[in-house]
Length: 417
Image (cartoon, rainbow, N blue to C red; front, side, top):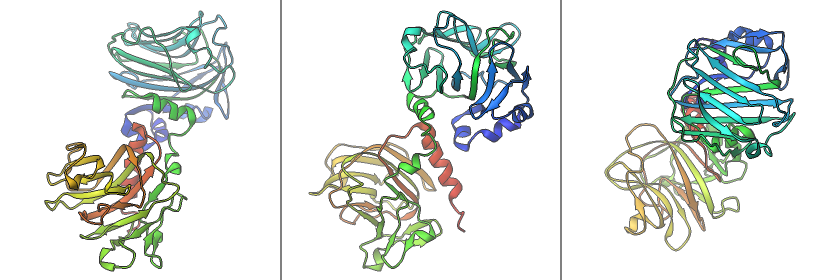
């Protein structure tokens, strides 16, 4: 990246997701240090860069940050104009000699438009299709997710009807990014520009909504179970490791009374040598429902089919993931895999020895007695290895949040050593 200060604002999960450009327009000093040229002294407040709509805008040189074949843009802004004010306003415009341009604007007739590649119109959203979502004077999030032939535009938690959704385009390089006007200084934007993100990937409505709701980075706070196996979480007196979600779903070591069933506490880990397991009793905070289960572990492959976890719903039926003989993960819902019955799928994700982070989406947990970790509900078929983290959250995570989990847990490993 040409401007190091942009890199300082990019979070690890965003970088792994494909972020190439990010700015939060926090101050004149930060923007100038990043390489921006600011025209006619925009002011700044908690919303970001305030533009008067007549003389003020900013430019910065580019190094292909907006030129990938897959592109996601998140733009946060506070407009001082109605969506149907009859005036054209540019949010941003990236251009170079020969007229390749990437631009986002609200046209005089109220249409939201995006041009990409060699000045190809890829988004056309009529004023009537987004006007009820537009917040004049308030916070808006506009997102673009595009790959040639699949062009999606989203505003404030809603996917908009784009009449050019199937339009093909070819990526081009752009030399300069202008924010707050067209590249020639015309059709300026009155209001505040708060944040701009560009990534070399396509995005989803779920990611857009998480940006809009400010829920992208606090997903851990909504966990129902959060076992981190820190040294201070080891409650020796009660033979358990503590849940840090605040829901009291602490995990008992083995059966709670037989030491040979206890995994060994380490610094940010539990080690299982065969016959060991953890169990979480059924609880009001773990009702029947759809969850995401997240795990970080290093398995020992010993040629047997062993369980990662098993949700007991009573009567020998439940939901589980299995570590299979071939080193693949298999999921069964209803009858347990060990009975050889019920729908199950192998090769969901190829398994290899070594530290892995796995995220299982859409798990229907129905826990009548207990949730068992590294064993089945009868405390058999135990998996050997080391478990670094185990979480349950009652929602579906988006791709950026999954990457965030992987990034955080991998950075945390060994921190207590």
